Image (cartoon, rainbow, N blue to C red; front, side, top):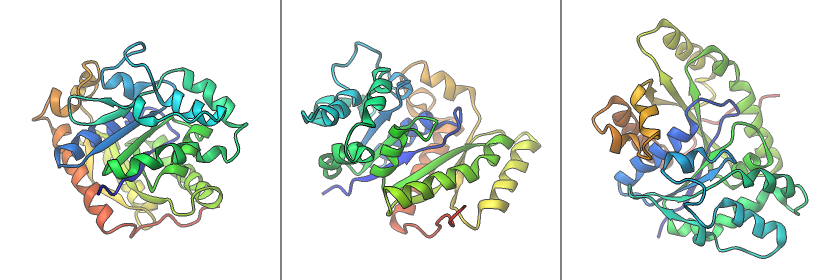
Length: 273
């Protein structure tokens, strides 16, 4: 029986590597024998495109699943699942999801639509990973309400470090209002350029200010051109550049995710006002 841990990949700042992390973490977990479903919960549909699907390539999506809740005509989410050649599954998304979000506000228990829609999928997967949009929208609140835990990719730059308090506030708000059991699994440092002093300084700032409150993963994802190139080919970094440092880092990160799941929740964010 699969345990079906649901992880939201979330940060309200864009360009930090959320989508790249969702896909490559998913493939890395699959390579370690886990059954993985990815959910594109962003109207931009970047995860869907990254994995090689475009508008017209699929009949059903996250849009149909949420529309079922709004209309009361329940939609079987398994009909929307696509199977990627790298052994991960995907529920895709497109721009119509933005219209759905506007309609969610009219639904009773509107923050629980995703939670209820994936309830029947939990026992079919070891991990369900949700790629969130870069804002605390109703779609993101839905993802955080559905999730057992959150992983936050943080880019090594000053503005990203500054935004950490907002991330903690958001998770505490969701914990208070919608999902008291949500855990903060940790911060993943991304786009790390170890050749620069700036990256080192940012790491020190994050560790100094948040290391006692939050788990900061040992693995860091290095800055690499190959990561951006892989997204143009609908392939993970493992398929595109399997011997690269990025591929090695995501593989190690997946091992950390598996391990941290075993010893769950040593580190919890303190309540931030």
